[in-house]
Amino acid sequence: MPLSQLLKAWRRLRRSVTRESELLAARKQLISALFSLRDGAQPLHRWLSVLRRETLDEMLREEPGLADEKDNLDDLLEAAAAGGPLQTFTVEIFGNQGKSPDQINLMTLHSSKGLEFQAVIMVGLENGVFPSGYDKTDEQLEEAARLFYVGVTRAKAQIHLTYDADESPLITSIREVN
Image 1 (cartoon, rainbow, N blue to C red):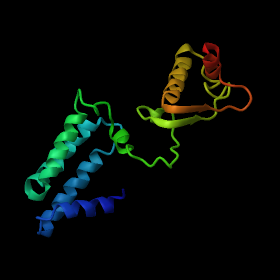
Image 2: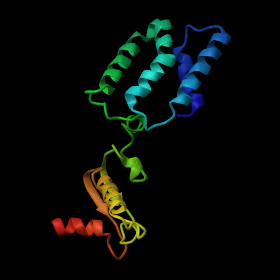
Image 3: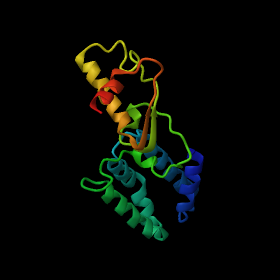
Image 4: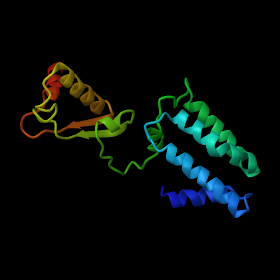
């Protein structure tokens, strides 16, 4: 969502603020909080807690029509806390929930961690490409195998592993197990 739309939606929530100077100060506070929280890899609970402390608590106190929203925020914070069903969610993972099933997500193996999809298509799984021909040490090869595992385990129903002529030894290792 563009910042301009976010600020318009936020303004509609701040109906009781009528003085322009108060509105500008609150808007500046919101933008500052969002800027400091822009890392999508942050744990969801931490992100929500900071945003609540920096901007939302004041708004929820001053806007009586938002009483239900306070309860919803409390429930979300509880779900994102340790032991809750969202405890492992980052802001990015949470933000990707409910995306349209009619879209294709193109991403790196690193950024796919924690996400799941009905179908996953992994491309470029040629010998010498993945793992790279430059990966020589056991540590480098183990890291490539770990990333391969991350990619394969993102699929809920289907996985398609593509290569040109000479398949990756990681694919070969799967064939050997079966």
